[in-house]
Length: 138
Image (cartoon, rainbow, N blue to C red; front, top):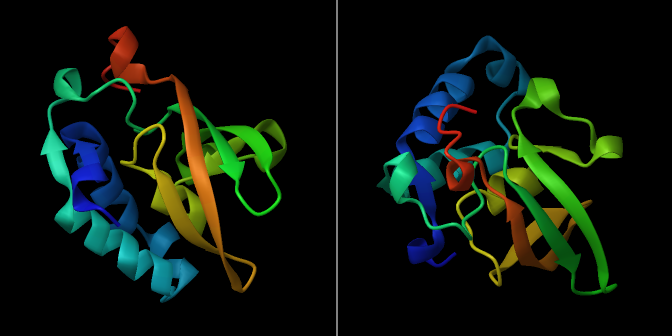
């Protein structure tokens, strides 16, 4: 991952650190992607909510993601686990895909492990970002 494309708001970082330390997350067990996610948080460029660029995927952002192998595109909102519902396009940040997307920008390509294989996906657009509309506490 290009570290320059690993941007996180202070608010998101604080909430995610609490989530990772929670009993809920501990019950998931030692998943490799959670260890990588913790490292991603440690390596992130931290910015204040009002400073984040409008094309960065932050928590509660809505974005369009294209799977490059099949050329299928879907729209998702990146959410906390208790709000997740993939049928409604609400992707948990604690999934391998969700944890990889956080902090990336529109036009970034990511490599994500899905069902025992690596898949390349591209973030096409970020159509909604809470910080862009002044919703700094979503």
